[in-house]
Length: 265
Image 1 (spheres, rainbow, N blue to C red):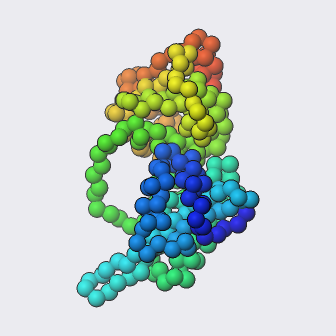
Image 2 (cartoon, one colour):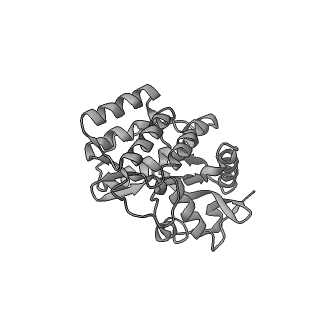
């Protein structure tokens, strides 16, 4: 395994990795807009982890100047789109990539490094241990304009950061679907089995979400296990999440698996 700068041709593998790790991250045009076509981009603005030709890690760097007053410009770097392949986590690869990219930023004159992480996540905890401090920010206001994409991205992010949960869900494949408005996707798609997936049949079990349930999901990762089970129960009782059962055999198989899955939440 090596850590190296981006080379033309890597972008296809990079986008596949980002979509696997983040869930519907975007396409090649988005990556190029953020990196390759960004003003003053160099190949050293993107680092990848290469394992015998497979891209298993990625981090992008954005160098900017922050103006303080009228005469002072401070060189900074923003750490963006960091991803480690789910099969390669728990091996210290994020720490290695983190160290290499910070060293690169410092050697290029950056005085401050910025990053944005969800509180309580693995990356948040690691970055705090390596000297990052949390800055208080002014209130931000958010409106969801694509609820289906938010649901898919949130579920994918949570699943890929919990390897036991991912393994338990993998067996369900196309027997369990998630649905919100026009969006519909299977467990197989969420865990990264990106081949041609058939549409949900009448045999599959569906969890149908409403937009009111999304506010709960945004806080899901920061909850304790007991809180998660309690809140999921409330969502079902309040019918913010509805279950549409499939064939008896599939429904029974999914129900048995759910008992195991609850233990990994």
